[in-house]
Image 1 (cartoon, helix red, strand yellow):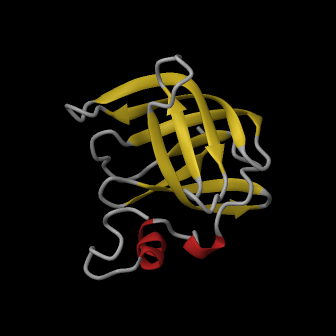
Image 2 (cartoon, one colour):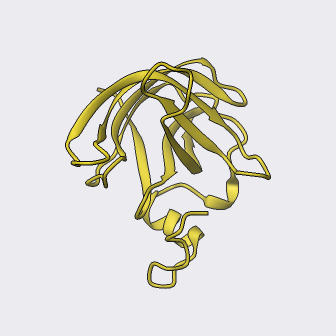
Length: 146
């Protein structure tokens, strides 16, 4: 659970997810990433080290996912937008850590950025929203078609 859960005006993680990630229910969990491939963008200003947009191409998406990505992130030091490309992997709910998605920016088969997946939003069998644990608030990455 993110550090801000329970500290932001006394709101629970369920309430924070409902507020920042419309249509996502925290308690539903992440059992599959089926339909994950696509482009996602956020509509809020990112904190340092957080994504603003990424495109995922999956080679596997059920139940866990892996593939390649391209996207932009706010730089860890300056906050300026930087482009990245590489591979990603996503794991569903696990009693030890929960659901997470990791990105390899450097191509060294390591994970450079990891975000806990607080929930997903689906429509017509396609995943159309990801709620990620950000550094200050949940991050809603919504599927875009351009």
